[in-house]
Length: 161
Image 1: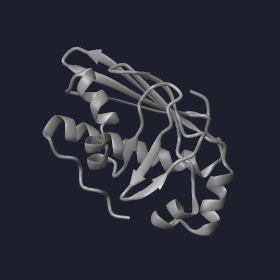
Image 2: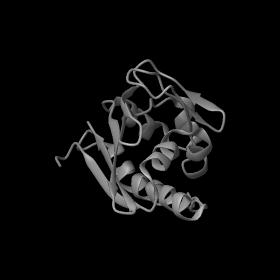
Image 3: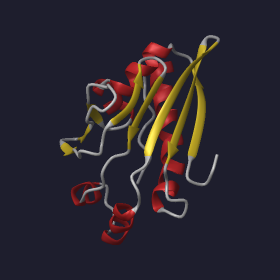
Image 4: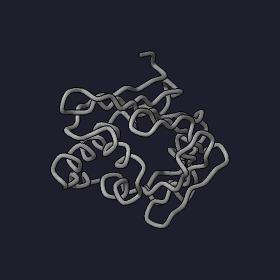
């Protein structure tokens, strides 16, 4: 992949339908991600990010592709001052993130024997931007917690900040 793209692949002992549910159902996403998504999960549908009551909505925050059990793609969330404050980002870091181009994430779900291959591709990144470094640490931790939740029924504890 080029320097504008981050890719992470893992194998999860689950079914494609269960993985799709875990990526789209607020009851699941809140457990391993701390975010509940409000969306109809159809191409063009808006996505609202709800992080413990802090809602982030934007006309450009939309579902790009949605094929249940196979593929999900959407634009990455909008950076707002309220979000930056909630995640304890300094003003300078927030301003740098807010200037970066909007990126997108794609989840490719493929059956693989008695497991499912999940490939997360986060693209359209500024190769020298902050977001690329943040997701380089964030996606592996997040997907590991998702994997644990689906395989054991328990998400991983949130790492200390």
